[in-house]
Image 1 (cartoon, rainbow, N blue to C red):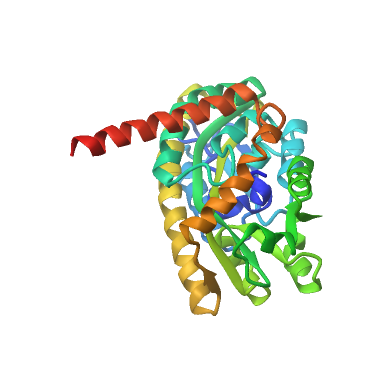
Image 2: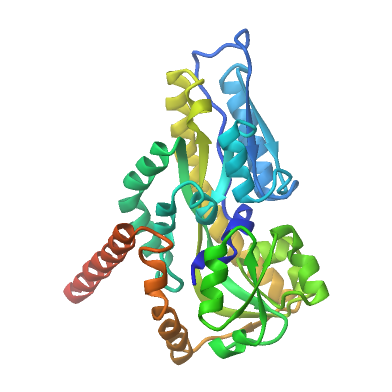
Length: 349
């Protein structure tokens, strides 16, 4: 099982793409570059509004030479669909989770590895910093420029009936994104009952009983009002929802070099802002859901260990099959390095 069971459908909740280009060397007299961006973020959400605000800033900075055109709410299809549209030139950029990025290169999954792999978000930040250069290089080799990486907090299980142990979840019908056959197969291999659906079908799927459990982040559950159907959440940090903003290199190469440099700087700054806001909004969304009646199932260390034991059994189905073995091993090594350094620091106190 991977942390990104839901991620290629809910990527909008934690991230947004900066794909306009600001540079003093551009002039309105030059031909306008229309940069078409696809995202699953619904119109009117904070992420969509941030996209609009950033697009306006870049328009002014480029003297109107670059125009960001946003297609929100999954109007361009799933993340896999958007990758296909970028390949054919019908889209220029996409806001993708690691699930969508894996459609370009499976190496992107190294940012999530396995469920419950990261103990905290500081570990994720450390791994991201260490692994980004090689991940960016691999995506560039496939024709995509990474603008920034970010995340939006922890994925949890939302369900119609209480979940505590793995066997509780096995009794339910678990949402699995229609794009990922690998995720579906992993659920099946470990005794669960996955149901393959398009992300837009999740609310209706819950209403009809087609699915009864959804792995997602609180902010998506709130935005989609899933709590009208799911009344329980397991407070288990299944994994962070990680993603990146990417633009196709063909479009990137149309932008003057000075504008590209300025855009990357803006993108990096924006990525940090998105991450901070996304994590905070995830916590705020959970508080709002609880206020609306969501019941949070607390997890004891003993119960958490049950889930870890189950996860350990599927490592061989992920390493070398879903993601490259060398990157799987590298992410494991970096986390161990981080933990060892932390232990030494604690010993010196």
